[in-house]
Length: 88
Image 1 (cartoon, rainbow, N blue to C red):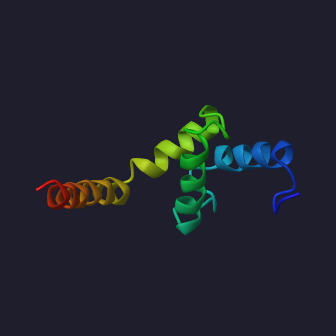
Image 2 (image 1 turned 120 degrees about the vertical axis):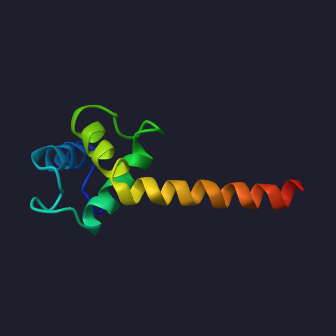
């Protein structure tokens, strides 16, 4: 028993929550969306969560936001710089 009861209860509840609104809090994007999106983003690629329906839409909303795109761009630049110092 984990903090959400069980996967059989937690996954459908999470799917319903992210499917009900564009944002987890309902009215506006918040840190809750970043947190929930990161959990979905972790769970889908490894098969813990099915990347369909509400999960796919929620993940898309979080990962295509301007701030997320800029953060990945900065991360890619930094990763390249680190790789260059290790390889050169």
